[in-house]
Image 1 (tube, rainbow, N blue to C red):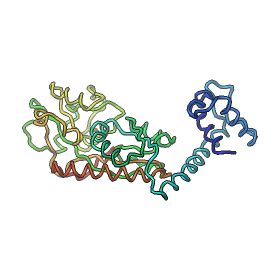
Image 2 (image 1 turned 45 degrees about the vertical axis):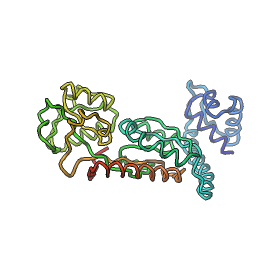
Image 3 (image 1 turned 180 degrees about the vertical axis):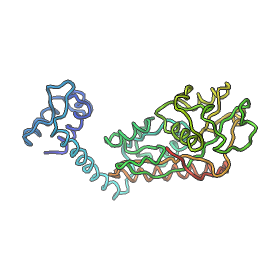
Image 4 (image 1 turned 135 degrees about the horizontal axis):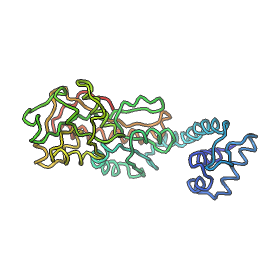
Amino acid sequence: MTITQLYYVLAVAENQNFTKAAEKCFVTQPTLSMQIQKLEDELDVQIFDRSKKPIELTDVGRKIVNQAKNIVNESYRIQDIVDQQKGFIGGEFKLGIIPTVMPTLLPMFLKTFIKKHPKIKLKIEELTTEEIISRINEGHLDAAIASTPLEHENIKERVLYFEPFVGYIPNHHRLYNAGKIDVSDLEIDDMLLLEDGHCFRDGVINLCKAFKDHNDDQFQLESGSIETLIKLSDEGLGMTLLPYLHTLDLSEKGKQNLHYFNEPAPAREVSLIYHKSELKMQIIEAMQTVISGIIRGAITFQNVQIISPISK
């Protein structure tokens, strides 16, 4: 039994196809098939039911795949230990970022991070929280930036910052002349929300639920982007809440519609998350250092107080 054979097994289990798995592993299909057959012969079991289309794992195959994930991950740790011992910060690093964080945070830290750590090859994807959790568990992401706490047993979290909510209230809205606002002022009926699948949407709903009952069927107007919510609000279709960093690039006209909350301001917790196996920790720690420093500078410059997170 070899690590390579287990790696091939995991590839077939994920792709449910020998040809696709071979392509992902950069080997020929006959080579991959032969190695998996040798493993099955050695163990005297059938890992895959090849009669099914797509290919399925047998009962014992599922147990083997679960154990293989642990073994392959632990094998990666050996190189990781060597890299840390040598003080090497480099190699490929796959990072996921949720949609409501990606457009504001990434431009703030990417150039600085690349310049400071030129040996790291970043591969960045915009993904929902659900997709991020799945890919971290499957070993397809090294880390991610997401709204927390997630309370997932296989995932560790390092808080980067607490980002306050800011009300975006156009001049025709009932709260426009209110100055600073309180959470108790919010009405879910005139709140523009992101569509299902966005953790920021859930945070806004939970914030409103804390003060008022509502029926989820009332949510008729939803969008896939915060920029669209701003435009819809400008058209008189309601108010919305923005993560603080999204307010920094608004036009002067747009900033006139911003209404800050009385203290303590509601906020979301944004963290760097990764698998409990703690692979590539030297890169994770380097990224945390760069992002935290940049965020502290942005918050200090704007003189915004960040106090308490709300639900993800």
